[in-house]
Structure formats: structure tokens, C-alpha cells
Length: 394
Image 1: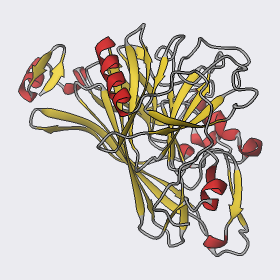
Image 2 (image 1 turned 120 degrees about the horizontal axis):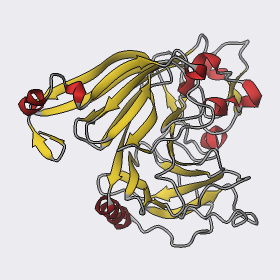
Image 3 (image 1 turned 90 degrees about the horizontal axis):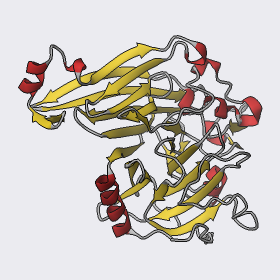
Image 4 (image 1 turned 90 degrees about the vertical axis):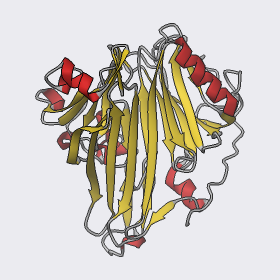
């Protein structure tokens, strides 16, 4: 049964109360028509329980807007949801990615993540291509998807809202990686399920790196909001050393928007529960609102925390990653880079849960603390101990 408006309803009940499910919930395809967003196909999901989010078909099927009972959760940056045709991948020395950086989920990959890098291209066996130049966080987030399905699917008295599509990052004499993505939620639900599979359709041995930039915004992010995570070790902080406390912002307690703020990034070693799952959350106790993100430790062994608390850009990101924060050179040196041969694939499943009310926040905190108790100090000294990622071919 679905839970709508404080009561459990069968499929027959739902049908009896309206001519179409869309009165309460559903998935709708539309096209944006103005400014830098003009021409982008977008799917709008409504669960009937207050959860609304949009999926940008022409931006890798990433999740853009997200709100709960009219309260924003996902980040809208100054760049807007820019049409991929306007994107200049190699512009600004590789930093032009920032001009297309917005939304709750921005996918990074498929063959590169983190900062710009130039790598040998010997594995593509093409003389004129001596190297592969990668810009910040790779190409995938600005590639249009091919929509293969969307809508509502009833299974007895339970209804799933879904979309699925394929995003191809492909070239001649280079990578041919396909991302197959399915996004699901249920009528009456506060949760989103993201299922990804990356497959090498080509016949070159190809590197694969993957990361989600999950960007949480006001009002979940506000003065006094907290970051909750099962941290067993603070591995690295970009601003550690003499500048660690310079901006007066630690890792777990968040301030109001700041002026002239420089981004802060941590890598944390997180513990998993007995099922191998890693839950983290950002919560606003005053509003009784939060977002919990649950990933698999086997799929994403690393996780970063990003703070962009600059006024006018105010955001906090959870970043599950296949590799450590130093990117491809570090991964190759340590034999931790993923290489995919023809038809080989990697799969990723991530769950997003809106925490509605003090009881939901308390339950999430109890669960996270039962796995590992995070440091109480705002500025825990980074250990510099990057744990090996095993089972990968160098």
C-alpha cells in the first residue's frame, strides 16, 4: 500500500479518489525554454509525500532540483542548469566545468575525477594521440542522455516512479564507456534510489574513475547544521597545517554564509555497517530536516566532504568516490586505478533519504554513531594514512 495524506491506500483507493495518479504523484517530461537552460529535457518526480525532484535528461540524468514540503534540499548554483551545448570542456585551463556545476547530484567520471590531469594514451594505440587531457571531474556530467523509459509502475498496491537512460562517453581512438542509469522512488516515499552501471563497450583497456558531487543547500544547510558520519579516521584536509583554523570553520558544525570563503575539503575514512553500507547525513535540528546518503563501502571506498560556504554560493557536498582525493596519478602509483576491458562493468547503488522531523534525525544519528563515533573536535588532525584499496589491477 502507499501512504498518502496520513492514510494507507490501495491502488483501488488511489484510483477512486482521482481521475489520474498525476493529481497526487507521478513523473512528467518537460523541456526548459529560457536562458542558459533552454532546450534541456527535464523529468519532474512528485511522490505525493512532499518530495519533489527533477532529473536532467540532457545532463547525464543528474538530479537537479530537490525539495521536501517546499523546503529546498538540492543546490542551485549561480551557473544554473546550463545546456550542454554551451559547455567548453577544456576552457579556463580545465576549470570551465565550474560554469556547469549545479544541482543535488553532479556525476563525475567516467574515466577521470578530481583536478585536471594529462596522462599517457598508449592504451589507445593511436600514434597522433600522445596523451589524454582531463579537465576537472571529467566529461560525463555535460553529456546528454538517451531516455529509454520513464513513468509509473504498479506492483499490487505499491507504485514505483522511475526513469532510465544511457549516457555515452565515447570517441574514436579512445574511451567508449556507457553509463546506464535508473532512478526510482515510490509513491508516498521520502527516498530516492539511484542505480548506475558503467560498461566498457569498446575494445581498448580503459581507465574508470567515479564520484558523485552530492550538493546540499539551504535550508538544510544553515547556521548550526551538523554533518554526521561514521568517521574512524580524518585522513586529509586541503587546508590543514597553519591554515587549518584560519577561516574558523571546522568539519562538523556549519556556519551561516561567509564572505571571501575559500573552499574546504576533507577525506574521511568511514566505517560500514554489517551489510557494508555507509550512511552519512547533513541535518538542521532547528527545522527538523535533513538528508541522509547511503552508499556501499565496496563500491565507494573513499568519501570526501566539501564546504563551499561562500555567500551567494552556499553549499555543502558529500562526495563518495572510487579513489582517494589525489586523483589518477595517486591511484596509478598505488595500483588502485580501475581498468575495464571490453564488456566489463562496475555498478553503484545509492539511496537518499529525507529526514523529516526530530525523531527521524535522532534515528539517523543513532544508526551512524552505532557504526563509528566521529571526532568531537572541530579540527581533528589529519593522519595522512590513505588506506589501500584492494582488488584492483594496476
